[in-house]
Image 1 (cartoon, rainbow, N blue to C red):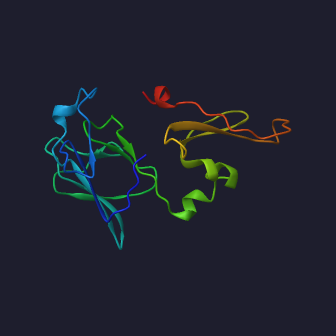
Image 2: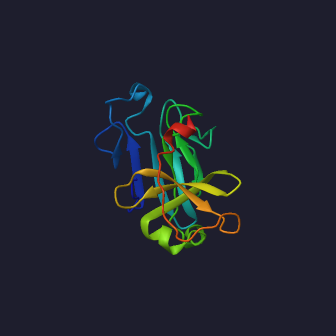
Length: 161
């Protein structure tokens, strides 16, 4: 998890960026620009500006060099292709967070729904203690008899490939 605390935040392969993309283990490193994109906080919202040669994608759509788009909660940002997911933008706006129980908000930052089943819903989240991406299952108590509530975490990375 990368906290965006400044009004402008740059991402790319240069060490001068707010977030430098590491070369190690990244087979697409040569496709990433020195400054690939900028995220700006403005009075009208949060904007992503594409500065790259090869393109920045938001929810699978190419932004276009020197063009900007508004970012909203759960937008997926890709740097090296429309299907690759490099970042998920998570807003700290209270209206997005209120749908999660207080006990969960104390431990995780909730993101988006991954899927539903007969007994509940699975959400993507980030554990606050170590910033690990996890899956959290919300169980419908009307369908399952349960004496206590516990949190179960698992890595959703393999589910999204």
